[in-house]
Length: 127
Image 1 (tube, one colour):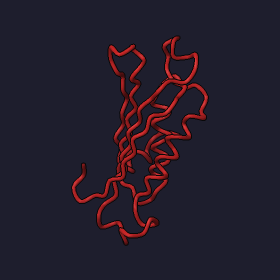
Image 2 (cartoon, rainbow, N blue to C red):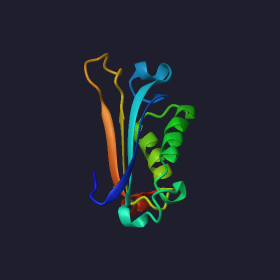
Image 3 (tube, rainbow, N blue to C red):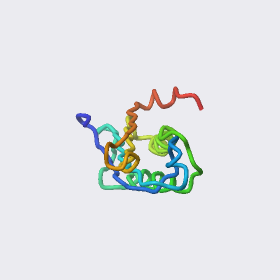
Image 4 (tube, helix red, strand yellow):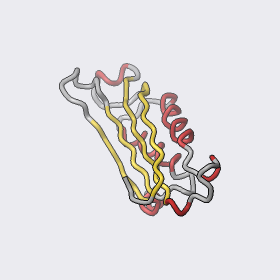
């Protein structure tokens, strides 16, 4: 958590075409996604208006849209797409996205990738 910030969070399990293991390349697999988007308390003009707050619907729809993507070897590709959606909201100053693949090791382990960025770091990323 960031002090003096609003945080909109979304947890979702999606069916994603991802992975480098040959067993992962036969179709989509369950991926658990968690995303947080922070906005400074002072930046929210009216916390009673959806237009003035961090809209978690934007985040949720970006996560669900990943299910239509072609196969990506790396989860990082998908995380960056969610980050782009989060930072499309000008009020957001920091975001974090993590993805977990609970079934890839048949219950023996859960690989995960996460990224936490400030707006400045996101803007500096090569496109």
